[in-house]
Image 1: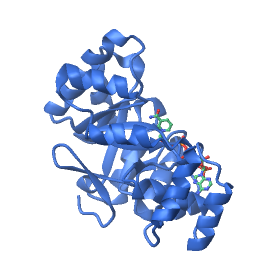
Image 2: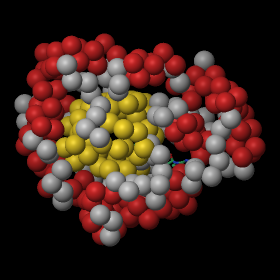
Image 3: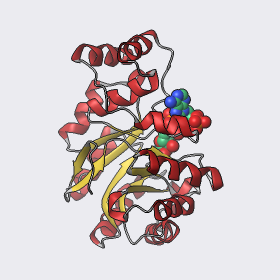
Length: 260
Ligand SMILES: NC(=O)c1ccc[n+]([C@@H]2O[C@H](COP(=O)([O-])OP(=O)(O)OC[C@H]3O[C@@H](n4cnc5c(N)ncnc54)[C@H](OP(=O)(O)O)[C@@H]3O)[C@@H](O)[C@H]2O)c1
């Protein structure tokens, strides 16, 4: 991957861009247009899921962007109701996306029956070993659930994708991921934020940017992957335009403090 924006290294020498593009609720023509606009704006990481029902649109936008497949990082996710049908699910994702491999495949939610946890994780590892995906991870897992997988298989999820934002900031939880070599990926950065919070508006004004851009930069400066979603062209562009300012240590602390 030839990139001039920050990445984090996953096991297997896989480079994951810290800024990605979320696609939940971006389907059909609007989803296709949004992904194409995102690639045009410079995003090189797309987050989809079997459950989002838009893998075809995402794949078509990647192909029609003219970018090389290896220059776009693609994540999709296994829905909880596909336990026991993991291989057919990833094969369907690959067909819909029009690619022969994913960059990251995640278990979307912990299986409803705890007895399924380890078998499902082993299926993800098997898909990685069969080169259907370069890395595997989970989403919406607590630390005890991560440890259960690691203890059973001695294989750490590369990533845990969880709801995250300044108001959800939890230093200990972040450290727990770091200690295990698991990359924390945050979702719903805006929905979980109050963009009119005075701390965010003050810091945004100081850098002549928007509170939304401050929220995204705060993730990146913590080396937390962030995947904002938008179907609005100006917002798609603005959310990718976060490389020309950086937050001071004091500003980072002030934003961290919003997490209580
Ligand atoms: N693993 C999971 O369980 C899980 C769960 C939820 C989400 N996700 C992933 O994370 C991605 C992001 O989360 P999300 O879609 O829930 O929420 P989000 O990115 O926090 O927020 C999206 C909303 O914010 C608006 N918005 C975008 N840019 C903005 C800006 N600069 N200023 C103000 N508002 C802005 C969007 O509106 P417009 O689109 O109208 O512009 C949309 O309504 C998802 O798309 C999905 O890929 C994963």
